Image (cartoon, rainbow, N blue to C red):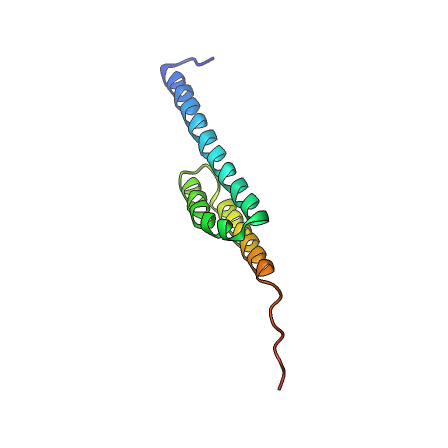
Length: 99
C-alpha cells in the first residue's frame, strides 16, 4: 500500500498507462494476425494491409509500448513474409539463359 500522496498518484498513473499499453499491444497483435492470415490466403489483401500494419508497429514503438529493435524485427519479418508469399503466388521465376 502507498505510504505517501506521491506514491498514490504514481499507482494511479501506472494503472492508466498499463491499460493504454495493453490496448495498444492488443491492437498491434490483431493487425499482425490479420496480415498473417491474409498472407496465407490472399496476397493482394496482404499487400494492402502491410503499410498500415507497419505504421501501427512504428507508432507502438514510438509510444514506448514495444522496444525499437523489436519493432524493426517485426517489420522485417512481416515484410519478408508478404514478399515471399507474393513471389510464390507469381510462380517460379524464369531461368536466366547463359549465352
